[in-house]
Each structure stands twice: as structure tokens, then as C-alpha cells.
Image (cartoon, rainbow, N blue to C red; front, side, top):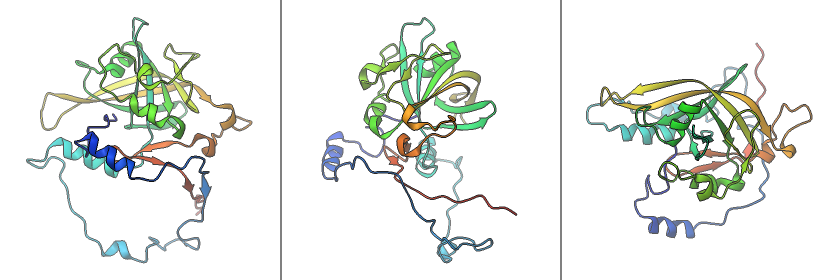
Length: 269
């Protein structure tokens, strides 16, 4: 799950504000462009495209369960190394139908297309669930909204550590749009949204503190897709990257933009 702004690397908000103020302005309107791959003449068997430089570097072996190594080190290592990661901005509604929740998760991915299956990793346990997990476990449904450049600040605001029952919709200023199959609302600002039904939940136990549940994997089936009309092709099979402009999660409090891409055809034997 994504952490609030103050959580990683930056102990003082004032310090970060000074650093942020010294940076160049965000460049709106940058189009996604396609360049040639690093080595356009690459042939089968050529290996890496760096002329062998990577073969000269050594590696450090890391045992995630090494004595004295805190689990926080593994967390920082994984979120800074397994990048970029898609962000699932998950909206849920409580079982009583009253309170709503909206929260971002960067332990997320699509894993199958028939049926359409998605996974989300949530911190905590079923015994003491956070808002999204509590709602998802009780109602068995949610909406996965994909974050784009035009509402990244609002999406980040939903990571606030608000008490249960306080809606992040209000904190973020994002707008609810009606769903077709599930009770939870879609994010109207989202170019792409997936209505989902819970397939399975699996809890995981801590290696450092045996018996303590520290994480939950949710497998979700997509039962309805929503794509903005200017982002979908005629046969509704392709989402336009130049319209989607997805934001990815990097390490710490860092996010990534997709402004340049390459295309590599799959090889034929």
C-alpha cells in the first residue's frame, strides 16, 4: 500500500517544501513519443546493449531474513527496485452501504485476461483490517481505478491515514461516478476503471514475528471495464496510452510519468 507523504526519506515536511520549490515546473501537455530501441540492429545472441559494461560489475547478496535485518529494509528495497509499478486506486463501500473508502495500492497488477483477474496486496490482517480490506472482505466487491497525470495529487491525498468512516473522496476532491454491477463508485476523473468482484483472499504470516499476520493478497475478477470515450478504439480493445498518461509508483514518495516508449516485436523462432 502507498504511504503518506511524510513516511519515507523525508522526516521534515518543511525541508521537502524547500526542495520541491527549487525544482522546475511540471511540464503539462508533453505527448508520449516513441523512439528507436537502444540498439536497433540487435540480433539474436547479441546479449546486453551496453558493450559488456554490466558484466564488469559485482553484486551484493542479500538475505531478507538475515539476523538483525528489519522488515522495513525489505520494504524499502522492494519498492525502490521493483519499479515502475501500476497503482490501483481502489474504491469500496461499507457493508452498511453508508461509508465509502478510496485508497491507492502499488502492490497491484493484472494477472489474467480470461477471466480478467487482478491482484492487490494490502497491509494488515483480517483480524484488524484497514478500511479497504474491511470493506472488500465484507462486500466482496470494489472498483480499481487507474491513476493518470491529471489527478495524481488528488490520488496521493487518498493515502492519508484517516479514521474509519471518513471518506477520502472528500479529502481528495475526486468525484464519484455510478458503477454498473458493484455498489462502490468509480472515480469519474479516471480514464480507466475496472468494476471487480472478490475471488479469494489469502493472508500471509510474518517471518520475523511468527503468528502475526502482516499482509493480505486479494484476487479480484474484473466484471465491467470503463474507458473514457477519447481513450478507446472503435472495437473497444485498445486503451490509448497518449490519453491514459498513467502514473506509476517508484521508491519512497516517488512517482513516474510515461512520456517515452519503444516498440519491440516479439521474436519468431
